[in-house]
Amino acid sequence: MSRFLFALIRTTRAAGLCLLLAWPGMAQADRTLLVLGDSISAAYGMSLEQGWVSLLAERLRSSHPEYTVVNASISGETTGGGLRRLPGLLEQYNPEVLLLELGGNDGLRGHPPMKIRSNLQRMTELAQEAGARVLLLPMEIPPNYGARYTEAFRDSFRIVASRTGAQLGPFILDGVATDGTLMQDDGIHPTAAAQQRLLDNIIDSLLEIL
Image (tube, rainbow, N blue to C red; front, side, top):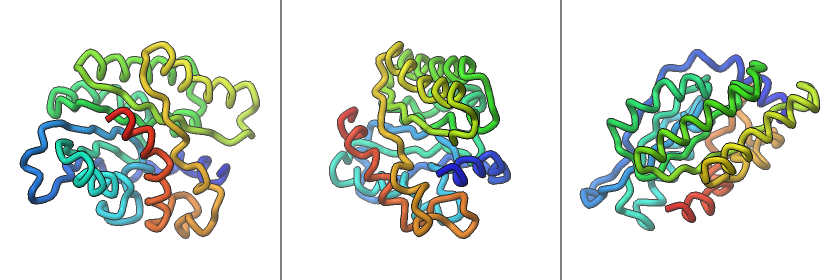
């Protein structure tokens, strides 16, 4: 996991992404689930259709056809970047649910935990003020950043969830980042075969908030 997470800091070259995921027959959809994340959610190194967000949209087509999934994730995104983009996304899509998967790149760059926490909290509050429910996905960083920093970083997600009432989900990379067979050749990103595992890790929390 350390190799995977440490290398994510170099993943800033990919273009932005904002994709509406829908299928024929979904005209009845009148609710939006907005995913705001980094390369983990941006299907880095594969077609967008192979990424876990697309797999989620396909699953919801049957179980929750009233939802349209919008993927606004960008590889290399930080909480600061997400905070700058979120107001426009909220205005454009008026989501009922925001899935927030950010913070890993901040931690790898050594950004102050208080600033990460502030950005996450403000994004959560903005979404809630716009009428959206928020699922906050925690991230992890390597232990070589020091016990004090890694603990403060990890606690940021729990604290934000506690302060705002957002739902705190599980670690989306659980069981993936440490398994070389589920990683791309660059040793940085999960493979297409790992995407279902990413979805499986968070689906229960997401269905609960839906």
